[in-house]
Every structure is written in C-alpha cells, then in structure tokens.
Image: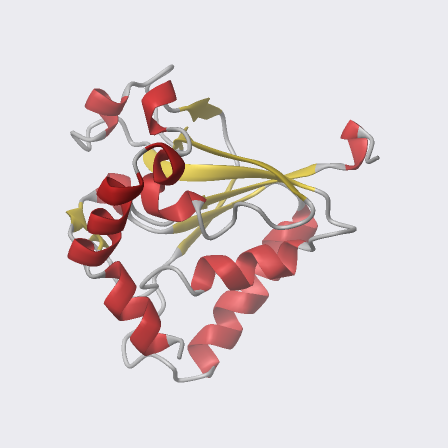
Amino acid sequence: MTKNNELEKATFAGGCFWCMVKPFDEFPGIHEVISGYTGGHVENPTYEEVKTGTTGHREVVQITFDPSLFPYKDLLDIFWRNIDPTDEGGQFIDRGEQYKTAIYYHTDEQKQLAEHTKRQLAESNKFAEPIVTDIFPASTFYPAEDYHQDFYKKNPLHYKKEVEESGRKIFTESQWK
C-alpha cells in the first residue's frame, strides 16, 4: 500500500473536463481523477461562473497518482493524445479561455517534463500549426460540483454523445492512429 506522502498531483486543462476524466481513470497507480477549476482570480468558483469565461479559471482535471506505478511522463502522453494542442481558442466545440489547454505543474520535475514533451511534440512536425498549450505553475484547485464528478460513469450516453459531437473523438483518432 502506498503512503499518502508518496502520491503526487497532476493537473491538466484539456477543454471540457467531462471528456478528460475517462482517459486517465482506471489505470494502476491512478488513485483519483477530480474535475475542477484552477488558474483564475475568483475564489470557490461555480460551474455557472467559470463557463462565462470571466473568472480566469479553466476547466481541469486533477489526478492523484503514485509515480512509482504510473510515471508523470505517462500522464503527459495521455494528455497530449486527448487534446488539440494547436487550438488557441478552446477545445473542439467548447470555445473560450476557460476551455484552453494547459499543463499546471506541481514540481520542478513536472515543469521540465511538460516543457520537454511540448518541445518534442513541436519538433515532431505532427501538427502543421504551432503547439499553443500553456504551461503554468499549479495554483489553488477548486473541485467542481458533485454532478460533474465521474460524469462518464454517471451519464454514459450523454458522455458518449458529447465526445462524438464535439469532434474530439474524430480528431484524436485521426491524429494519433
């Protein structure tokens, strides 16, 4: 059993947080994936506030993981494969600052790995456009309301429809086949 002091946090903004939980969930070493908000100037924001784009917060997932079982580098690989890192205006049908991609690092090592993988992706020429995903220090994380947690499990049909209609599924399958 892992002691709590051995667990780490990773925080990613990948557009709609409903769509970002499932890719990380249910791997050995992943203890928890929580939907929430970070990066803004409003304390204890609500979904209704964040979706207006006026709070400075982005929708994020915060992952608690055991790096000895699931390294941070593997989390970054999952993150990059589930976003469009060239989209400056949000993600897929979700538009606005609150849906832009970002990696929020919790340690210097996470920062270095995030910058390294971003550079690698840019140098790979996999995308014609520049990689615009932001890399920021982690700040206060606010969990989203309960009805947003584990949305893909609680509302599987709505989740599937969201992923397909947003364009996320087609994009990620075509980019990363």
